[in-house]
Length: 112
Length: 110
Image (cartoon, rainbow over all chains, first blue to last red; front, top):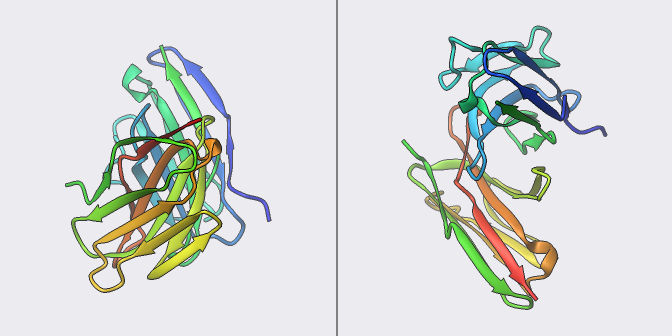
């Protein structure tokens, strides 16, 4: 069984540029999560979906971040106008029916 | 506020020793999952518990089934490859929200 796939693995941007991260969850998993992990900190939830619906995006900086999962499978997280404070690893995870969560390898973003 | 409190924040041990990591929850949690994050940043799932205990080789984890307010991870006979940062993550009742602790950075010395 394939795991959670994320791309790209790395991204380097200048402030003000936009970037999109892509996630392909484990097939059949209904719940998909996006986390932000700054260096030397624990992952912090940004948004999660059940199927195509956003369940909680309260921690997503809505002025510059957006996330979609239009068909309830793959998901895209986009940052408009990146800031240096967005430098972090972005992790995608999926689970089925509120059970064990599986993570992708993450996208390491550096904003200079 | 913070719901998952992890301790200790850092731990340095010699090979062959035993250790215990702990997560306390400020509210009753439905389940807990333990991860090890390697040097490349990958989060490797060690255990998922909705109750009771699980064991895998030198690792053992427990989730307080009565009050569901804490979980522990025991590492027996530590080896160099156990080094890394260990995270617990707990799931709330009533939703799928999963909250991480701040992690324990474990260093195993020869």
